[in-house]
Image (cartoon, rainbow, N blue to C red; front, side):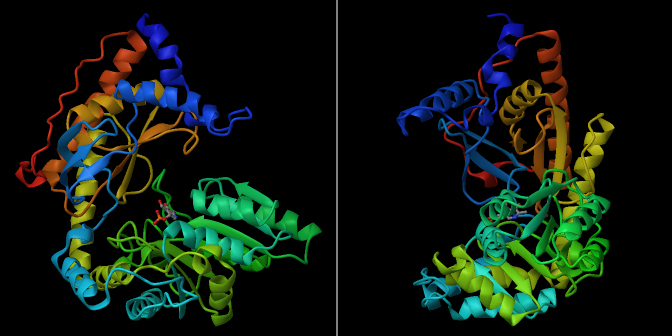
Length: 455
Ligand SMILES: Cc1ncc(COP(=O)(O)O)c(C=O)c1O
């Protein structure tokens, strides 16, 4: 097969969406074509998903691919933005929680699953967000899906930023057929849609959904203006702070805090799986009625086990650090590493999208180039997330690099050099033909990440 034929093959041109709707009477057998395609990518080192970390998500770490090969290198794929999951005080809080409360939450939040650490976390979040009523969920996904499906009835309307997270899109789709996706960050488009909806429907509710920081593009909406447009047209605003809460804004208060909107947005929600070193999610509201309604009618709250005591204790300690002077120091370190990474990429002709944040999206465009570059980046010991269609536009394949406060400037620079070199080399190979260097330069089993010198 010529190199041109290779890059024209399904290995490089198909996306998961090609296999999402298989036909046939055998529910299980019809998954095979997807598996074969995925396996072919895996065999070529072109399936960069479902990797596993051996050890904690530290700046230098050991990673194993799905085929079991391991590598040691620089970790730019974890979302532990302030490095709190391994912070000594957070680890001690986890040990204390385990000793005093055990692992288990013993039921859903409605049926015996509420715990003292969970209630304490609700109060701490209420104070941090300046919103008195907080409901917890065992995942961020559940918080998004549960909030929307609890509140929105079939005749209501949902307006979603087109790049909204899957939990928000799935919640909207499950709640009503009246879903409109508006142009990313375009408040004027929201105004136009609201006007149109309100001209024909004054009787049903409208929910407008956006995020505090969009993780595919690292950009931020104008929240105050959006909130006032919503109120002008009798709509409610929900801001998902999953990525910005903790790592951005004064005392980690996210974009909502940075824009002077703490306590003023109708509904805010978020996830503990990024800056807060754990799992779980929340929604916060000024209304006790709304909180109780979401708890009782939000499926993932009432029909799923509550966040565990261990997780709630970890998040509470992480939140304490986020809001402290030490939190400011960690955000400063994170900002410095982000600046070095973005600066290195830019010097070398690669533009990172959006505004500086812990998420640094590096758009490659062509899927074949991105897949070849992704393999090379892994081989050279830098771990990044490849994001492809349908999560991003079909010609918008990109690497989502996630920076942590624990990255040194040297590590950020090294990663920027590797990523920009690999993209340039992959372009050369795909566009002008060439040979993909192999085999993989893999160390198995990987040594302890602690033995990896800070590059
Ligand atoms: C904006 C947004 N909301 C919600 C979630 C879901 O959070 P979790 O992964 O903690 O369930 C994510 C996770 O990636 C997210 O990016």
